[in-house]
Image (cartoon, rainbow over all chains, first blue to last red; front, side, top):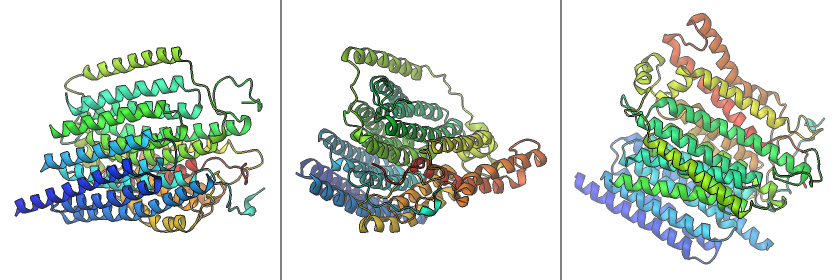
Length: 97
Length: 97
Length: 109
Length: 311
């Protein structure tokens, strides 16, 4: 049982880490600020989701698991709205220049 | 498992570092704030990995704090951008001498 | 080399970097930034001392840790005050340096 | 082994960022660099087993100081450019600073071994305070006087910031103004983030007695959420002479002092707690301090009172 759980954790964390890599590649390679923002926000949060899913399988305590999931949900909320705000600012600064 | 999770944390940190270098070599501009977004999601992932790897649940609170304050700093940056300030000012006159 | 010695070296390096920024930048806001970098290095030293004092089931000596918490809060208050002074200086003189103010038009700074 | 690799990577990143902050020509980039540096240091503090410090560093070092510096950089954007010091001077300064660093690095290897530690004493007396978090015990029981005086320092700092008010604008509104872009997204953010943030702040304060956290961390989070609501223009920035504001500023230190003097009568010395009620009293102090810290830090970040319209 533990072996299966461990294998699932490894798989999920590796997928999450690869998403972080994809996000960084997008950040380095995409041509303008809006696409870079898109790469960073979406992909990194997905990566964080996979990592949290993998970590959930390793925690025995319910409270710890709830907190882990709570952090992920909170980051979804805040990063999502902040990304909108940054996008607005990018569009605004383009309009000015 | 511990070693694997710390390895994953190393990997995410390397990705964050690469992303930061990418932002650093680019000139000034709005997408500077992507650095804060990057450390917000990447740093949260690193801390969560460390929390489970070292079996120290309070580190999860640190991850939440990091995510929350990274969002706050991003908002403060967007709000202070040139052109963003100066227009709408809400003042009640009753407090004036 | 242990992890805490490594972070001690980081503290030493960061103190040097902060000091360099503090003496070579004429712009007061940059001085303030450098000063904050310097103080973070000093805090790291406390962190290393605390970590070395790990005993009785604790990961570190709580006394230096509590000192650093106090120090971080006070450093924030000092930074806030410095920034208030600096923006006031800028409002009066149009300048944000601590250098020779004889050419500034405001005068009384 | 793996964790040493991690530590080395974190160490290199921190030093590189510190250097970047100091040498990058543009102030705004340096300020963003400093925020990222502060958030990154959080991870180092976690590696040094100082979770309480990590929480404080993330909240104040990254978040609130960052906001202060960002606003200052924005305000000073039109300042005259400053000439940097000459190359020879910078070279000599670099040499001297490197010498300082090298001597400090040498000190790290000369620290006494075994390291002196107050940890056993702190744990031994933890029972008497009724607390579970030794750092909270140091802050509120063993060295309570330091913490009390620190609160006074915060109030004095706020007074000196306020005393920089423009002539004729006392009492007035602190310099924080909602930006013109205040629109639907910022509104949405200011409606949805603070409830969670405030719950987290209260949790930090409540949890601080037994786990890492406490009045400082909780108060800072609440201050950040308050500032967010004011930046979004959802709540007016309060005038600095409003009674509720003044009361919440002094509530924490005042209760702290009252309990301190009560300790003189009941337990024999200033700031001593009667053993049976130590935890209750400390929690009362922490709750009041959380409120006061939130008010002081928020107002410190909001700045001195200013005229209504800025050029």
